[in-house]
Image (tube, rainbow, N blue to C red; front, side, top):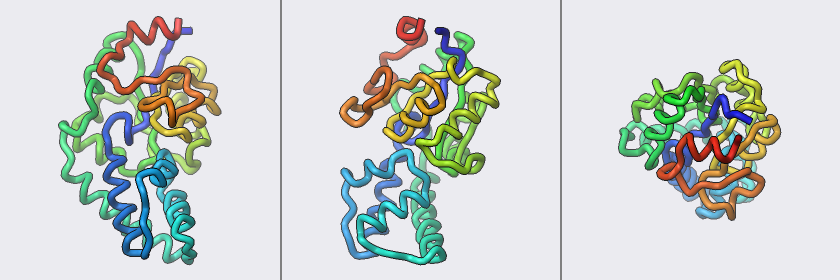
Length: 217
């Protein structure tokens, strides 16, 4: 098969904003009276803000009303945004910009598929927005990964068959979303945490279109 489009998650794939999510959630858990570990943070990757909060509260064995949860989610997001607003191009993960340019020079369409509602802000801060033909984020979808909505909408907007799309993900929920949408998927990071992906890469430094073509002929 020929890959006509590549769809990218944002956090942990394009930039490492996941660390800022973790810091913000950890600060909130401390205020709520319990500890939140990096291992537990793995449960939140690729998950929507409100679902992440539900997981956090479950870890702390706490119950909150809908209004209280909304206030907590907004507070956490504001803390996260305070960190994001300080971002610049140096935050782009190694090899990403070169790889995006390589895809474009070979006629591959490029889309972002992220649960983050802050994706446009982040792309503006790191000056990568113009690299994407389509941006699908938490503002334009209602179903969280592993539901494939975010990726299927990206394929639809690109006018490409999902079977001709390749997704790059660093979270298990995102990998499942891609597979649920009938797409190929490459796990970015350790294969220990990313079962089910077609291939695994530690990052984008050594990846190029030629290698992708060999994998997906």
